[in-house]
Image (tube, rainbow over the protein chains, first blue to last red):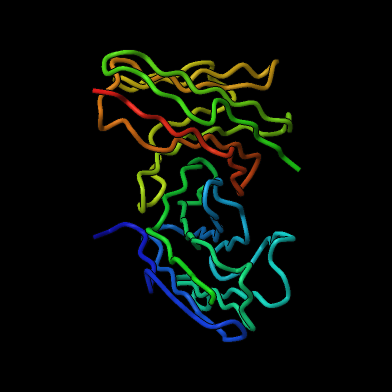
Length: 115
Length: 110
């Protein structure tokens, strides 16, 4: 499968615990995005990387959230001290980033449930 | 920032009929407008997109139109089939991030 992959697909955690999600983009894509989707809503932008550089963070991304893309390939999103309001689907997307291609392709998401 | 409004929130059509979903955006700098289809429990799937230098784009049974002056764009699905049933999202982008509408749940009744 050459599409965007995400792991784990589901995560149940207790309030206050830390969680980490992983995203593997399409191999030739140098842009990687994180979005959050809650029930009945469209995805909301969280942050984006051009290669290994994190270039933009949404105000939705509180200090408890951190994202990395250490070698410009896979990315991780960590949530510290999880809260019930963090329960959502976390989607990763990637795009070519060549200045001409705008298409973003999404992964299957990681569904987080905070109890 | 950008704000995208999408209507209707739900839409039921008979199989074979057409479906139209409309979106408006607020930021005149937006220049890329994709549409995504999301089936229950699955990833958003890009089905068609349009750039601001084009007024209309068609791909088999689906088409998108863009009116830059009015800041609105629409998705048209003709000859609907039961497998078209899903939630459809419009989005707008000026550079990198996509701003999504709240979605339209389309139900195609056999």
